[in-house]
Length: 234
Image 1 (cartoon, one colour):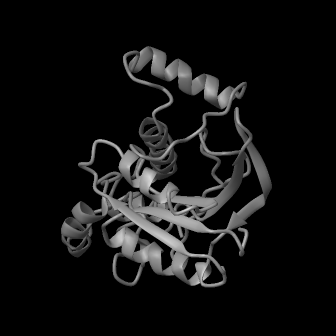
Image 2 (cartoon, rainbow, N blue to C red):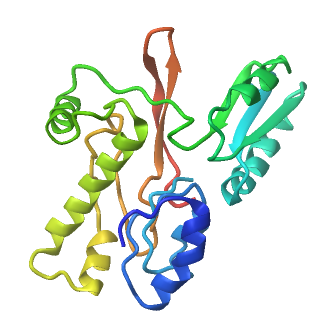
């Protein structure tokens, strides 16, 4: 099973696959418990782990994911002297316009959006060979699709990760070897992630994505802020 998407659907199937020792590679969810090797040894996961005086606000999905990140955000915001506003949305919502309008009215100065690709924007790097390869792939195989769609970009990256695992498998595509190789990814740079972000997995670390790079919007594009931040081992 490759890259199941969404906390509710993964919750419904993850025990089934693990009980039957079926490789359950790169589950896509913002919930870190899916990558706990003690409970789900067959599920390597693609889930990942400011100004203290500024007003802040947040828009999250009303799922386990939101329940996971909201307490952490709230704990951080307690250092602020101004209010925090919250808004949620469902995947079935056509837009989040009304939520954003409501949050804007609070006078907040910081917006944190914990959203799925349909609702969260992503910049694609220009003049990068990896981006050129991606655009060529899209032009050849998916000409009618939008190459700036972050869901497609994410899927492209995960497919590259799967290709890496299968190459490491050599001629042995048995369940145990697939898991062995999926948990032995070392310093893998995926083509459509920001430069410097690397993938490492191990028996102790089932999380595929443990790094992030802060960026600031300058009005036309994103500028990198600071060094790569790693959450490996947290």
